[in-house]
Length: 174
Image 1 (tube, rainbow, N blue to C red):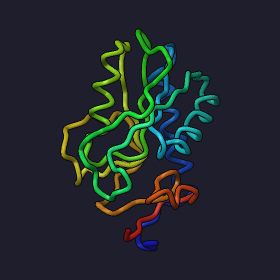
Image 2 (image 1 turned 90 degrees about the vertical axis):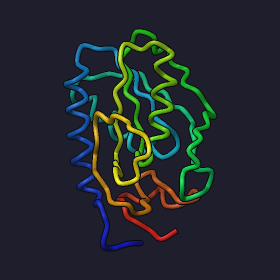
Image 3 (image 1 turned 120 degrees about the vertical axis):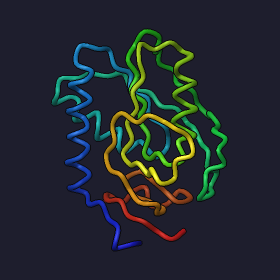
Image 4 (image 1 turned 30 degrees about the vertical axis):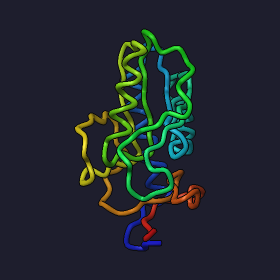
């Protein structure tokens, strides 16, 4: 673990609540479908949607299983959809949620895929943004934290299936 880079549990909690409030304001009078990209986003989404309740926002929740890493530390650039969204999104507002955006391949590919299903709009939300690694120009509407070019784990993010359970975010040398 890298003790020089840590986003603490209280910092995460505060930022997730701020994001939820902003998303709730932006979607108040809309039927929102939240689509999480598995597996890394599951803890983030759980916390995010609990805060929606206190803001009066209700949402349909669904998940997609996508991958571009395949157990490696670098993306292959090829995004594989293992499980597609099942919720009806035609004519509805969609919030696409992921744990981290670095190259941009996954967010760009999945946004394009979802547009074919004719939602009324798609916004994106990521807990972590690593802009120094961007390979594809992708718009992110809601960002929790910008992070340096380190290998990040914790709060749902893993390395080969480990470290997801950490209540904080840190960097490791894989």
